[in-house]
Figure (cartoon, rainbow, N blue to C red):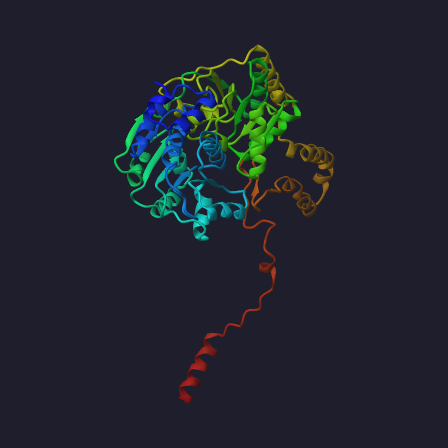
Length: 497
């Protein structure tokens, strides 16, 4: 099948031909006719199969007839992240260059004033993240009563990120007669139930089993005994495998920064992207990675969804994702547009539960990749050095107790003859010496803990030496009257009565 058979206008077909595409992907071939017919569509396909073009091409065709009104967009596309929204905007510019369609991009990190100017002129296509769109709605700068087509892209991610209330509020502002399109790589049962609130009798287009990985991607897991060995193992794989460029995923933003600095220190061409960076920095880093200036991109899950970078040769999961569905999105950054790719996941014993969940979801076993004898020797040497202190006699006690323990032991041995000859009172005065060893260390949060002590023989009687000062003050109590005095007082009260 070719694009000419899908019913698109000559202008759209010309723009597609100039991009070099001649045949539609399966999701495009099945979804585009339904969108052109005005039906609701629920599209499920692996990441990297061209879902974005499945709705941008027919939307350009439909919006070519009509005119936009000020502050009233004719179509709305919701995206979970700024990067995805910017990427969809690029698709509209590329495929719609032979149509006079206006477009506005509402994302965070950009001035409200520039976005409001575009809305005031009227736009045919409004691409937005839910939070920034609602901000404009509350300011009265945009009305959604003219929206004819609503697209919720990466639907499962939108719902996972907690956008359900925002999406429901946005849908209440859009006419009920709208056309609604949902596209996603995974579609759990709970997401299926939620689509009933957004769509009316949708056409289900599913070109791959839900939560399945691209068969062109070579998957492997690398077993590591300790987390502190992950960076060494990662560098070893990068040096031994034919890595043209790669995206390295971490679960936490802090780990993204740490790993980026480590790779940069070892001479690798690296960049970092996560949610705490401003939008201009994130877009500049992505552009550097696309152009080849940056070879290794260390990222959080903000880069896991929908980013179209065609020539990524490898994906590394420095940390396995805590949600199994995110694994499909992460490794989907490679093996795109019919190309081969490879994905390696670094796994410690603590990560086993996440790998098991991923294998259960994919209904397959991820093969183990051996990283070679050189790396094993390095690990063995590191383990030997780490365990060396345990063989020395002086290292049997924790470091926090050793220094004071030896000096006190020596002092006690020297003072023993004198202690035996002294009076009991003097012996009692010498006893606080062992008590100093029991003095607890003060830790963060104000709590006293001794993790290096496991004996419970010493018992504390009362409050020991830590009696509060207010309990040591002398308190004068009123003198208690005797029984005779109480009887005399009672008789006196009776006589007065």
